[in-house]
Length: 220
Image (cartoon, rainbow, N blue to C red; front, side, top):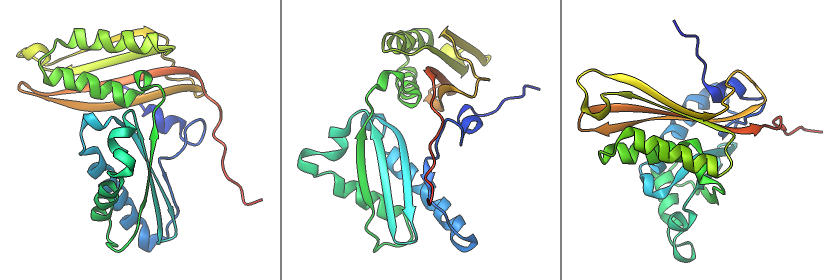
């Protein structure tokens, strides 16, 4: 059996920070956790055209809820003069129990979308669903990432590639991807492509160089 661990969870608290930042007692923990899940699914339902890379959720007590959306296309999410922000707030409000709450939405731009693992995976999935050859889709994504400054990238696809009767796994790599080095800044994402031949799993690892340790807030 392979001994594998999630590249993000492996570095959590060392060089990676939490996507959800809040504290809750036993009574509220399960509720907040489920709300976080629903908020992420709601916003991700906007599809790949929204270019959402990650979503951070910050809570302060039971009243204050702040959602930060990192997107490669912030203009599309914000709209003209902020006209679309209200729609995002309504989507978040639908996902939480307190319908009278007023969540705050912030949209931030992803400066280098070519080396973001989530956006790379979304791009490969889109092409696979459009019946583009998996080798072509992967090599194009790898080429863009390396030109944009990635130190290394690995992309793996698994399933009935090209409509083959027997499922198989193929992977392509360029540069270094040191998964066992805790100080390595590894961005990772896995997502399925829903093709007419069935699901094809797509995994992306991007090595961006050495990472700085996470700085935690103190009460001093």
